[in-house]
Image (cartoon, rainbow, N blue to C red; front, side):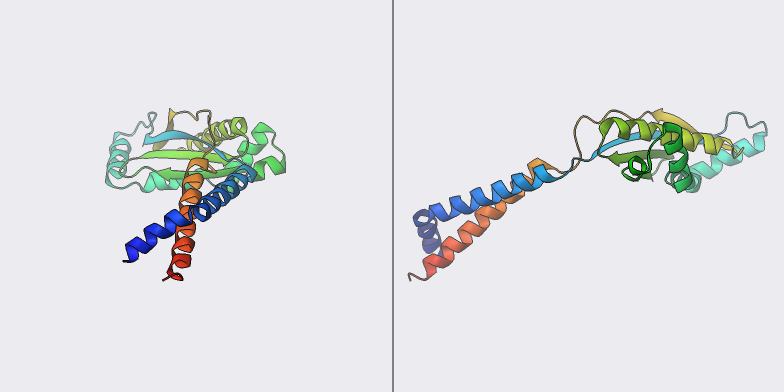
Length: 196
């Protein structure tokens, strides 16, 4: 019985569903288009025993530590996101304080590996790519000056972002349309109940 009421309500009040669908889709389009696009670029690096380590015992010990736990990689990942590295990269590129503040730096160690991914997010795609490269360069320079038994070597350089990562317009439109349909169907159904 309820299904029949629901179906009749949908057919009889199709205009309510259509109207709410249109409203939510238009609102979603306006909302997504008003948001500033955010781009991202990432470079990857590998943590490995330094090639210039002359002490064989230190070299083998370094391999053992890297194979047992990613503590070194986690430390290097933290260095990449430090304020000092960001400041060095900003100064090297001659960025203004506003430009530097608009760039977010992230790093993570890929699970089960000693590969570090350093990524940068911002509103300017070219600046994002350039800054990601410079952050990685500043990090490797800093680590090389530590004169430790580990190196940080570039695996894949930062690429040029071809499209923004946020906002995801397709996802927002799907969610907006689904919300509009659900609201329209719900209102139509409730109005139909009053007739019985």
